[in-house]
Every structure is written in structure tokens, then in C-alpha cells.
Length: 253
Image (cartoon, rainbow, N blue to C red; front, side):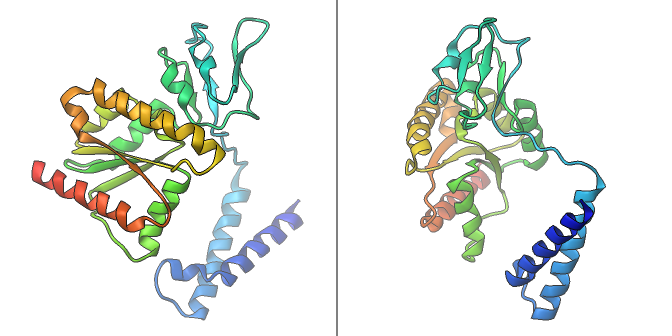
């Protein structure tokens, strides 16, 4: 009810004040920080109460009209896909990790990750790319955190480096890479999580294999795609990779 919502917003405001969220934008004193935290809470309340908000669970979705029941997607490393009694491929949402490996296996494009469909990713890269840019597809886990920490550590990289978050780089296929090149990307970088968790131990070797396969399929253009494993402590190395690729892109212009 409204009382619970009011209490929730009040707690959020208190958390914002406690964490001095205003200084994330620029240096501020306590008064300005509290004022900005209050405004952020008011805006959050307005957003929440405006209309119901529904977020797609970022797991695989199957288009039964495109599915040919070939069974390739059943090679899911987490056994999240199966065939039901009606002969249809079905997904167990409690098992699916949203890694995107099944999207690589499905030649018909019947399996895509909610929130990261091919059309959505194409639209996103079209919106950010300019001629000569470096496009980085960044795993939304540790890799994304590592990228964020570059700024938090007062390090920099060129503005020509554009980053797009993905569940894992397994969903980046040949068509998407070529689309990036057609829209001005000088190079494409895969930034993937290291194999230091049970999920990543499974995903990482699949991603490396996927990248090598793409590199071979792209021929000469394969020289323009790169792979980087991102550890949180290695922010200088990642920033250096971004800078190096950006300079190469400037030379190509």
C-alpha cells in the first residue's frame, strides 16, 4: 500500500544520504548531498507510482514459430532446455543462467535472451557508434564492474571506446560483429569474465572457443576482433587495452 511505499522511499532516501550519493556526480558538501538525495528519492517515487513496472527476466526465450525441433539447443551446458510431451522445446527458468550459448547453437534464431535480442543489440550499437570507434561487448558481471572501476580509480580511456553490456559474449555472433563494422566500428572487443566462479568455469572456455570460431569465419576482418579477460584488480590493463585499440582506430581513419 501507499504507506509501505512511503516507508520504502524513506529508507532509500536515508541510504542515499548515508552513502553520500551526491558526490558520485561531483564534489559536494553535506548539505548539497542531502538535498540531491532527497530529490533522487522524490523522482524514484514518481517513477514507481506512475505505472506498474515489469522487467523481463534475462533468460532464454523460445520462438516456437521459428523452432524446427532440431535439438541443437539441448546441448545447453546447464541442461536448462528439454523437449516436452508435445515435442516442443521448453525452458526451465529456474535453471537457465541467461548465458546465451543456446543462441549460438540455434541456426534458425528461434532462441534469444530477453532484453538482449539481435534487433535490440543492433539498435543499441547503431545509437552509440561513430566512424572509427572501438566497440566493446562487456559481460554484465565482473567485466562490467571492472569497467566501472576504471572511472572510480580516476583512470581514463578515449571517448571513442563505446561499451555495450551483454549477459556473456556468447550472444555476439558474426552478423552482429559485421553490423558493427558497417556502422563505423574500427574494431570489436570481447570483454569476458574470468573462470573464477562455477558458472564462469563453464562459460569461459565456451566463450573462448566461440571467439576463435568467429575470428576464423570473418577471414581478414577477424583481425579486427579482440578478446580480453577482465579481472577487477586489473583495471589499468583493461584501460590500456581500450586506449591501444582506440589509437589503432585513429590511424585507420
